[in-house]
Length: 469
Image 1 (tube, one colour):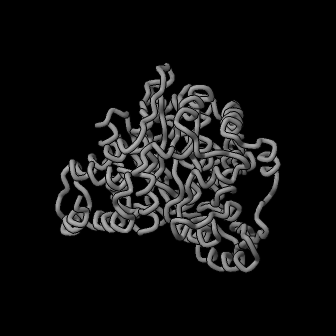
Image 2: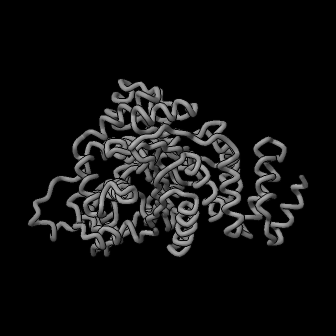
Image 3: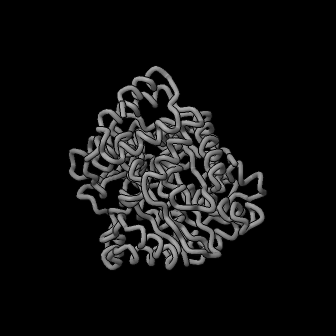
């Protein structure tokens, strides 16, 4: 085919026919179109966009570029969750085993990091022996037996997306709504899901900088997902502040395990003191308030988002009649400790060395150097800039600057002070885990600009802003 003419047509803002999109996806997957030409088309799409028909055609062509997972009949619904990416976003790790314990099957096909955002597979690579590349037959068998799997797409599963995904990261074309829609939904539709919950983030460290852009992306994905027969819902979440208190591949695995073990990092506070210690209580999100939920004492943002995602899927699959009842069910399940056992079961099924993993978990740090950033004065944290923190972690080696960059899983930032929390003079704002002293010191200097301390406690900003369905 004359691919150059398609690049030129999109450069001029013209519309591609579905047949043209199907053909160039087939040709690119077969290696007949070079990366540099596809990168040029991606840049043209970034600036000119795709209409609804083009986006649908691209999504389905990418899905059909390889194998689609086929599962036997089972009373357990097939569900999944996907996030558009954020700093410290490790929700998928505790959510998959929780969903399995709630009676779902979870074929979670995940990806690697894009830009400054961490990838689920990069986090899992930090677990000794854990295999993220599995054949389709093993994915299906594990989902049927264990209830969940978190892995990458096989070479024969949505291969077009796998190649385009890497090019987007290396060509600066990540924040494109049609490309994001096609990438996410092509993989999810290839899982043959009954229901899907999407976490669409906005803010300084998100691909969608504004709430309006995030809403447009969410609506596009929800509409296309439902159109293709998968019950799809989206939540809009704030990504101006990192999720959780740790960011960086191995540090996020550790925090995920803590979430499964119901550890929040706070000391219990008597109910009578909740008002005076309101910095320890996270307000219910908009969706939760509408459902009549009450704020959960000591429920951190990671735990809140895990439970909220599970609650929506329970309602979407009619396993629960209301979000309030669904969240209670999910919280009881998480507190039971069964999802923590299911996590270990999943790890063993995917080749992890459980003894080595537990030994690594017991370490305070696996990085050679750890430095603390101290607060210059007492007060309340009014800002914890996710973008700056994400850039620092990337430059420490925890993310990719180019397609073939090697990831250092041990570096990152933890013990982050979050907005609304009080900090004393010389109190810890965060810790840097680095490969050497020079990198650690440079990171500390940059991280000083990520935090702001004010005399008054700042107004609370809900984590979940809106639900799109």
